[in-house]
Length: 264
Ligand SMILES: NC(=O)c1ccc[n+]([C@@H]2O[C@H](COP(=O)([O-])OP(=O)(O)OC[C@H]3O[C@@H](n4cnc5c(N)ncnc54)[C@H](O)[C@@H]3O)[C@@H](O)[C@H]2O)c1
Image 1 (cartoon, rainbow, N blue to C red):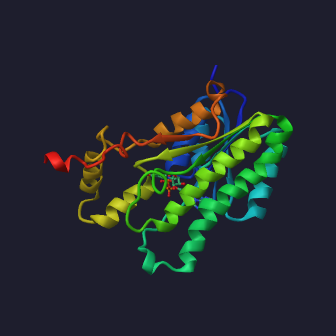
Image 2 (image 1 turned 30 degrees about the vertical axis):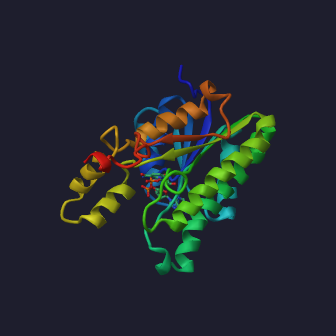
């Protein structure tokens, strides 16, 4: 018996990174997982999960486009009869100092991280209301909510918005048996983070990742499946009294106050 047996779960941004790792974990716990992503490789990602002996399907979707989202979500509801879980995870980032930002970059980041999260939640919500059951888990971040870095103004703004949205929707959705929570990852080893390391230290990206790990109390980056473990918990009956919360999963990276420079 898996803790998500017979559940129908949608995971966005599932072609790679956190969404991909989480889709595998949800499937391992018994859910039928519909992987959504605009990347063509989402088909192979679903195929890989089926090859592991679990239930998975893929849909090509641009979450920033409401029509696209509505069509895909309606298809899932028609094919599977209901939607129990949404891991609303697709997100993008660009590291640009504020004075260099243009509206094209702003709208691109807002379009996926805010509009995309809204679109997906809005499309699944009527099905969850009808069923008087649902689990929505949104991917925020420690960035913008707990800590900040240079070049992160727009991304930070979107992740704060995701958290505010989570709380406000949780309040409305609670009476209908729907929980809404946010996960706030710290540094997770994903293709996106590997690219950040490669950009900052092209001659030796692994040494950049090792140095980042050195600042984290648990001394390593998070694995994508570890975010999946948290998402599976929030999606399960074990978390049925948890709603409107922000779950930080960062290996303690946001704990340091002075990084001990006073004792150096
Ligand atoms: N990696 C980290 O350390 C970290 C930390 C905190 C928060 N996050 C958040 O976690 C989420 C996943 O990040 P990741 O590191 O796995 O990223 P990633 O770039 O490795 O993967 C993101 C996936 O989303 C898909 N995607 C992007 N735009 C899309 C769109 N418009 N429609 C459909 N799919 C789209 C991409 O094709 C890709 O498969 C994001 O919301 C990110 O902001 C990541």
